[in-house]
Image (cartoon, rainbow, N blue to C red; front, side, top):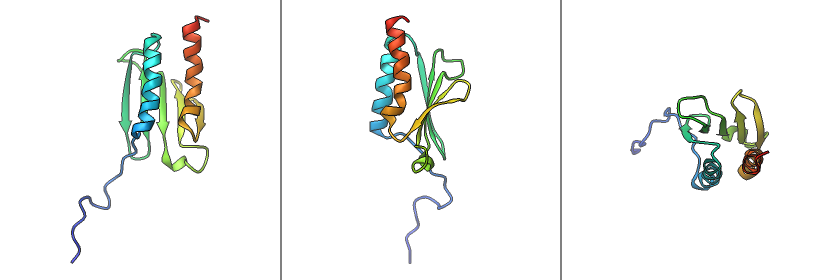
Length: 113
């Protein structure tokens, strides 16, 4: 007799950021908060993707969304930075490389240009 499985097979799995990914994202987030650019964030773990949303103020739409979509791993890359208007600013296989599009904004914010 087979032992019952702890979760039914039809239960949806959630995509989540792992510890290393969160460390990279939160490192950038901390630098942007220190520069006065970002003020709040939210994390969503959904069935198809995980999203780290960045806000200037709590009650508004996110400035940027950092998305992880594992199904795109073998295509254009599972990481993406999406702007407020829904435009994909950068997509790729390496999270640090994808986040560089936001690092450039930090350099502009600090230098005052």
